[in-house]
Length: 318
Image 1: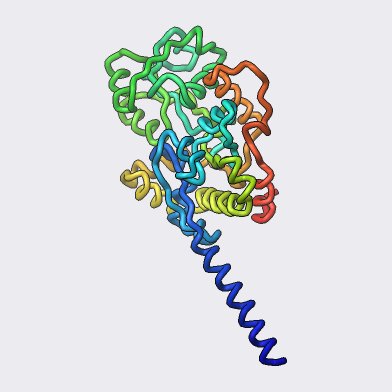
Image 2 (image 1 turned 30 degrees about the vertical axis):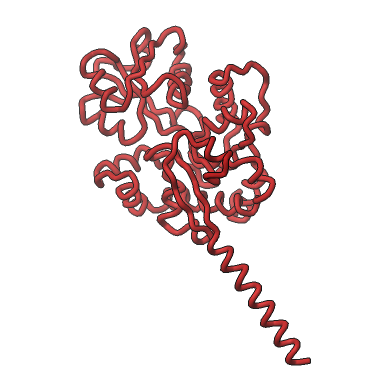
């Protein structure tokens, strides 16, 4: 009987060890569109071991667009929320499950002769391209200051930030929008920052998009991924120097640029993965416009936040 009990205990222990080993070797692939500060949460989570704490080997893959890869299973998650919401509205089976940057860390950078946002009425603003989250952010920013961007502002697709700054220097455009460290670089060139979007409104920017299939079949995996991102965001708030060092390595910039990026961006990161409803509705409206959809779109059509709530509880979020 003792031998039988001992053998049973060994089998149970062996099973638990095997389960733990498999759990520790879970591999996931997360896509993100660009090397930009607003997508820092998940790469930082990888570098600082938060994914390992949750039992993952995470591979971060730069891919844009990434929704086809997500639906096809080539990646497990995608970090860019705007395209995910647009895809969901178009009937593609994906949903937002968490948000790490609820406020866009985007600055309106102008030539020095412009002293206020209202003075840009009738001027040409250079954007990377016409459409997408930058265009949506520009519309919201000008609306905040009483301007109708579609009627009172001219937009020009001017390409990358270096080209947009060159257009401003040549007098071809009055201003541009850019995330950190472009605000810092613009100031060094003599330009001025007239407004910062993250100080004005919510507009969920970066987080987690998952397939509906994954939500149904792997909720525990999603919960652990969400928790890794929340831990990373808390680190961003609590460890300035450590975050700056990760920025140096991941963004491939020097410490001066990394420091300027941190100072401009850190307040845009939340500490619990929450998706602000008012901001998500703005994203939905922008996505409807891009998808040319006129019908009402409910939040649960583009987001499933039940797993997020469980992750928050386990991490002690209020």
